[in-house]
Amino acid sequence: MARIETPKRIRGTQDIFGEEQRRFAHVLGAFERVRALYCFQRVDLPVFEATGVFARSMGETSDVVSKEMYTFEDRGGDSLTLRPEFTAGIARAYITEGWQQYVPLKLATAGPVFRYERPQKGRFRQFHQIDAEIIGAPEPAADVELLVLADQLLHELGIAEGVTLQLNTLGDAETRDAWRTALVAHFEAHRGELSEDSLARLDKNPMRILDSKDPRDRPIADSAPDIDAYLTQEAAAFFKAVTDGLDAAGVRWTRNSRLVRGLDYYRHTAFEFVTDRLGAQGTVLAGGRYDGLIGSLGGPETAGVGWAAGVERLAMLIEEPVAERVQVAVVAEDPAQELKAIAILSALRRDGISAELFASGSPKKRYDRALKLQPAATVSLGVRDGAAVTSLRTLRGDAIDEVRLREVVGQ
Ligand code: ATP
Ligand code: MG
Image (cartoon, rainbow, N blue to C red; front, top):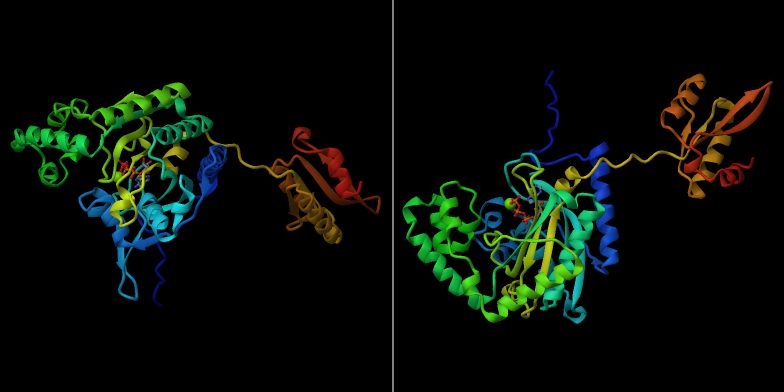
């Protein structure tokens, strides 16, 4: 007889369950709370887009576009890509849905994203991001608001202490052109010592060499000219307004003049929240300003700034959340009273009291099994001296309103 092959979970995907699920939900819950405090509207977008949405906006030479995208042809022959990030899809929606009428638009979203990467701790092929964006606000105050939001989220998650905000400016177009020329001259002078990857970047996107993790590139990247000498007055003033805003809001930050981010669309502010508690996968939240993005997708020139954070990485950093415990265990110790137990169970749940029924297995063991869940109270339906009795017992008085419970149970 042919053996049936058991199915396998696809490499780099996860089945999020138990403690992991609780951590995950805790991160999403905190994001949802903070997003509402900052008046960001929730938006949900498609998981796939036309490939060009990502390829054109993120840049053909970026790691994501050149080697990490899940791209496929659908049955109609169109090239589609599973979203590797949210920003490009939000920009597409802004253009196709006519969201210009709502600017400035503060948006928050969350969900799975897909990248073909080598799976390891904190790195998956299907992972999850939370994401916040402000579209149509060219002022530095928008960058500040997003960073303060991120900082508050990390505080609410109890992980702000171990995480540092690294901040940089990439200047405006004029700044970047001048800086780029200086960088190319510097890297050209060290051509022979650069890694193959960085040699390829030298022609297409020399700034990215600054970001290289290859030890051959590090000394050359570290000695490269800083952007500061090339900042136009306007770009310098913009960066100062961002840092002044952060100081005013009491958000701590450090300057990292090597921080460039891997995507083509960033302008002015670029930032990462980094920790050393996750090994090589130390960036938990990252983003920047992308004023050129919507225009490059064929939309009207529109300012934008935003960030995304990996839910899994945040979930690994937080303290284990306490597991939800049931408030009331309804125990049908007497099998003849199972219908009455169902009636009580339904009444409790309709009243907003969490409840679980114990009406299977041996009658003797039902109560013991209920206690294992550590309920706040038990309602047991048994027989004493030949008569049916419903008895209530409170085990954790702080977790249940006993008066209300008696009312609902009819005791
Ligand atoms: P990295 O340098 O770790 O590859 P990145 O610069 O590619 O990160 P972004 O594109 O900025 O990451 O995505 C934002 C956040 O999403 C990251 O800071 C990280 O927390 C998370 N992230 C990115 N890639 C992965 C992945 N493959 N698995 C899990 N989380 C990820
Ligand atoms: Mg990456």
